[in-house]
Image 1: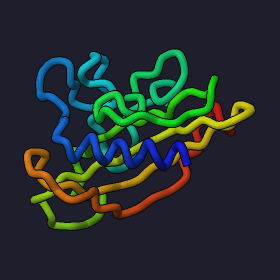
Image 2: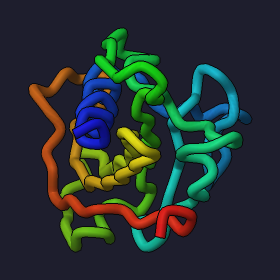
Image 3: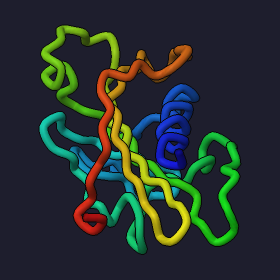
Length: 152
């Protein structure tokens, strides 16, 4: 449930208009490492550009639940709030075989934590209109559990 909550928070982050910058802090492919860009990556449809350590752990550059949306996660004491990475796919039309160039394609990656060290990671592929528009919600195209190398 925590991982799903992080996917929902990532979607809200998108809906609120936060977008990857085109400046030096946003590489051609890869993730931003600046505080304002936490949780943002530019990716490719065929392969993620981030490492599992960037989603969680000591090297995490992912966004924490509520960091940009103002939401609060009701976690149990001693359990970390969920985290997410948003990948804007630069070759999004190719990913789905669609001609739809009016909307951006994003891959949302989330991890949630539970009791006794439990971790669950999820991934969703979503379409989202122009970041400057305010859609009702992200349009989910696909969803799957995400198996991180250090979780198997």
